[in-house]
Image 1 (cartoon, rainbow, N blue to C red):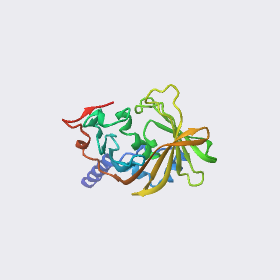
Image 2 (image 1 turned 180 degrees about the vertical axis):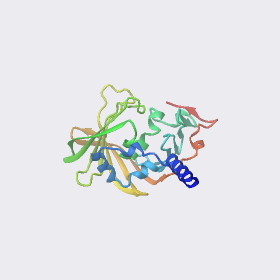
Image 3 (image 1 turned 60 degrees about the vertical axis):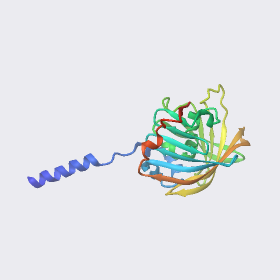
Image 4 (image 1 turned 30 degrees about the vertical axis):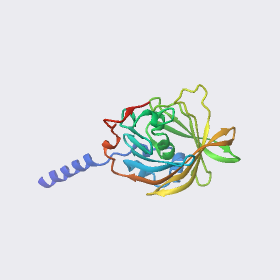
Length: 253
């Protein structure tokens, strides 16, 4: 009887501590093929924190980006400013004027989002569907339409299309619209993914280049950024990293 009780106790403890299946692992088979082409994407599901260095190739400035993946708390350290998101508000230090863009909130996770595709499209509330192939610059691509739940993020009406190489299934282009600024007729833009590098079993593009889109062809270059020092960890970063400083910082939108 004592032995039976002990075995039942062990089974009960094991049942309580057994890890629940991650719902993000349940993706459409076509999309899984794209994810598989980018490495062991279970590493993204298991990771708690993500950091990298980003360079703006147009003005040769550098930024260091830090994110906790579960809460999406984030911080950007640049030469002239720091931007942070503490889970509720976006802040900037030392003042709003230090950032020359139209919206700090729009910027605070912009490149994190682009850089993390396709992994980030496993998020709850994101739907990925394979649609008819699309041609860009004379090449036909496997095409995936991405949509968002109405309560997902600041811009759930944004449109995204992933264009993957039909042989390797690796992402080469993302076509997207921006609705954050309430444009009545947002236009599609094109983002090129190039020079993939391994980072702990996952691959990330070293270079992202933004283009205007003119029908089925890309137009002028809008921007280009490059990345280095990509790190995924299974331990979250300290929440203090994302807290707004008591002095020399303001809430920004």
